[in-house]
Image (cartoon, rainbow, N blue to C red; front, top):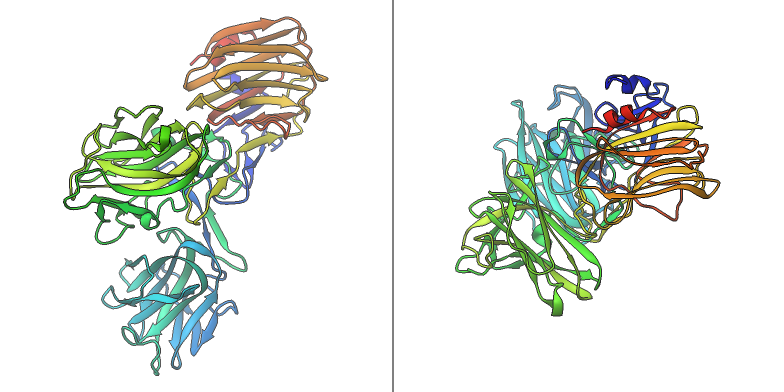
Length: 600
């Protein structure tokens, strides 16, 4: 069979580079009637991320306000104010509003009870007034910032605001004004004001307003318009993740196990403890440079004057002896070029470290028991990680430090590096970044794909199953690669990886295994695998090589196709790697064709 004929002869074809993923589905390109589409699930939160086609980390996003650009709605309380729609907006539309003050203490507000690190933003333009007070009420009181909509500056800034920004939008006088705080909200406000600190005075005047947004995180993202419920955008809860990491031009379907992010504030390092660190950028610990997600929300840690022992930030987390942990961080050189990661989980509570070169892209000599890794994320950013089995139980320190060489515990005063996206998780490798601004842990559910009702495209008496995947690591998990079944494990055909990366294959009919295979240990990188089967014959192929033949096979009737799982709740292995393509044939293709199909 010619290579170009494989797709035309396949009964089912899935290509990550050709399919779309949304609305809880992973779409196959064949069959075209939708019967081959995978039902996808991961969980009920926005904890997952992917690397998008531009090379940037993409998150799920949510506007936590309702009726975010309908200020006439009852969800927005008006006090001594009126609103008029149909005004010329920052985006060329007529979707802006005139917010007019009719008396003292004039404001527009919405009740909200969200908590964590939150960014509240609104588009504003001067009218007869050129000041606006963007304010919240939280569990500790009231706090906000006065914005000058004529001179693009700020006035009074209340305590408790951890960051703020006024950004010119276009050339027609509009600004996006935002404040950031770490809090539990009660209400969010906008006040028209005649002056800096003048909102409670009598008088009349107006400003223009459009698109209010409240979101988790340190920076205002693209506008998400909400209605009666909150608005969502980006990578949603049950959306398959087509990942472009490593500079890939074609994506892979990212399937990962469930992992819990133990770092309580993964981007806001103001909640961490400073150690020999005197400054964060221009007096701020956030929004110092563009991060790997493309927003200006990365921090800068600078070694304090006169301090020559490596410093940065640290925090304490709970560890359990005998459990393996991975600590990871995105970092980029500034005056300094070396990151130093560590945790106090060595023998006798010893702190163990490994340094990373943020210019050369290499790791230094790790302390005993640490496995390091460094990955290039573009634009000078690297994701650095250390993995170690904890030798102690208890609350132990976790360090995000810098250094002045690849194998040094010293640092140069007033030098610093950029940091973003800290992550601590149980497991033998760093999974995709899980953002957390909650003050507690966040769990990303496992990725799972199932296509059911496929008895017409799965070979019932003979067939072929093919998959191409990119294995990023081999340790620590019993991983399901691909399989077909009738919905039970008793009637199934499976390809799996053992915990040490050994390829395994199983064929079961009626609960009896007629074929069990334990093969070679696969290497990381791209692997092409296939199993052909028919009565009294099954063959396994890997990267153009026939691995084994069995002559006593009993073929089960199957109707479901699984990627990264098997049909039983008691065994939940996930592939933990990236799937590039998969094909089914309703015939057992020839040995020559199987070798051609699986050749790299």
